[in-house]
Amino acid sequence: MPNLSLIKNEMPVQDPLVRRNNFLEVALGYTKAQAVDEAKRCLGCKNKPCVADCPVNIDIPGFIGEIAAGEFEKAYEVITRYNALPAICGRVCPQETQCEGKCIRGRKGDPVAIGRLERFAADYHNIHDASINKTVVAKSDHGKLQVAVVGSGPSGLACAGSLAQKGYGVTIFEALHIEGGVLSYGIPEFRLPKAIVQKEIQGLKNMGVEIAVNTVIGKTLTVDELLDSYGYKAVFIGSGAGLPKFMNIPGENLNGVYSANEFLTRINLMKAYTEGSTTPIYRGKKAAVVGGGNVAMDAARCARRLGAEVTIVYRRTEKELPARLEEVEHAKEEGIAFMFLTNPLGIGGNDKGWVESLRCQKMVLSEADESGRARPVPLEGSEFVVETDCVIMSIGTSPNPLIKSTTKGLDVQKWGGIIADEKTGKTSREGVYAGGDAVTGAATVILAMGAGKNAAAAIDEYIKKEKQPR
Ligand SMILES: Cc1cc2nc3c(=O)[nH]c(=O)nc-3n(C[C@H](O)[C@H](O)[C@H](O)COP(=O)(O)OP(=O)(O)OC[C@H]3O[C@@H](n4cnc5c(N)ncnc54)[C@H](O)[C@@H]3O)c2cc1C
Image (cartoon, rainbow, N blue to C red; front, side, top):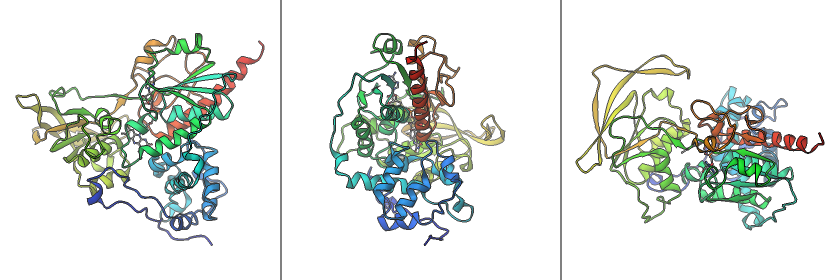
């Protein structure tokens, strides 16, 4: 019997007054009964509009049908035919603008909570399947044709997983000491527990994917060397866009000014989130976070958990905030203040070189700019000063130029993004493919995964063609 309720099942969450003082996961996940009830809201549409809007084309009605029937393991099997990282995607994908945005039930009432159901199926599997906790070290088979992947973020992981499924030997080269890219160093523990990221990566290792950490491509080895000297048949570049932007305003070199990337890395990788940590990080009393995207929300919510009173400074209005609605709501519930239509002009410091204020200006919205959003313009004579002892810049990132500067014949855009075919990831360099944020600039986990998966298909075709006698 279908569930005709217009309202989706709420996800239980930690109380905001409690959670703003801890780094434990905010959303607690559906119970079995809630999952089955929610799954029964799916009409199993024949033309599956939700699937068309999923960058990895998961058979959404297929896995939801299994949950409705109480077949939770089967639901997991259906998802993982398309997506190797379901517990991650179920937590962080912007479903509201993708699969759920196309759900027929959303025309009158709430769409089916597809993301929450994906998370449920993955968590159920992770809790109940004993084999997942075993570290199976798959034997590397160097008889296989080898492909190199640069970067272990979602694009690299998805590409590596697909290639391993197709029978290739895959080595991921990762610059940091921990795999996962932004999943590990950027997104905070309270939104995406690191144990879940590691568990899903272990699944790929169990398939035979090798990961060489602490290996910076462009320094330790180059893409050219991987192809010409180490025998890799192709290379996928999924090196992300981890180079933070600053505003170039006075005072950005003061103590207590961070890029959101550095601030979050200190919290995640250097474990400033753990009880009693001695990680060197400034725990400001009053923190100002500049920007309005998901990264700004994450930085603000982390600063709040480290004990600061936090204000988000954003130059447009609430309507234009690029962050997911859920993240904005969660930030507000945790007591984070918002200062809209405000742009920083300079950071003031004391005689010891520490931040003590942020000089700002009020803005008004004018006609739309090239991004389609109303353009903020300064309001004359509206300058004011905010007292703050920590400023976190979260105004975007771009790709690091290292790989471009060390790879022959690799074309990039003016802003640094690698030029690659949208469907295949093929770059200007023979045998080199690219995808994810390194190509598009900062985007989303699932888009990066889609790009990695598409590139894997193209690499497979390329290698097969190369093997044929000419
Ligand atoms: C704080 C934060 C929160 C976010 N929240 C969300 C969210 O809720 N939902 C969502 O969908 N998206 C979110 N995003 C965006 C999303 O995480 C990215 O779009 C996605 O991770 C991009 O994947 P990627 O594989 O292209 O790159 P990355 O995840 O950046 O991974 C690139 C990897 O390559 C490695 N690397 C770089 N250069 C080299 C080199 N020369 N040699 C070897 N390795 C190298 C890096 O160390 C890194 O591990 C968020 C981003 C941030 C920063």
